[in-house]
Amino acid sequence: MACHRCLMYLGDLARYQNELAGVDTEQLAERFYYQSLSVAPQVGMPFNQLGTLAGSKHYNVEATYYYLRCIHSEVPFEGAYGNLKRLFDKAAKAYHQIRRTDGKKLSVNRQRSRDIKRLLVSFMYLQSLLQPRNR
Image (cartoon, rainbow, N blue to C red; front, side, top):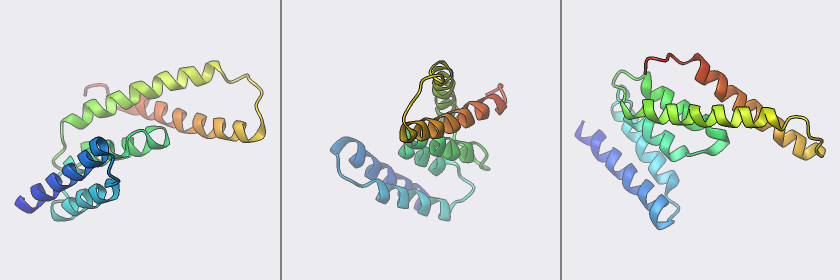
């Protein structure tokens, strides 16, 4: 577990460098988190950190995946529930916003981009509806 903890700290340091110092260490942080999972796969904390690292890429789908993996680990990290709820709240807001702007005519490329966004946001909104409400 000491090795797991050290790898987590190294991943956190690389992530902080990426976020605060502008140094491109995102892949390094990801690698440390995955290495910590290989040492202790039952611990969910690295998944939470990977979700944080994913940020809002792909309309939060990637981060949601990691937070769900964290929650469903043998040893979940309690903070992942709040992170997931925050993403689901964002998805609900985006879903209702997209529904209001559906009637506008767009070029083919813009329409394709909007369709992809609508699909991903709708998927996230559906995920939020399927999650148990007790957490």
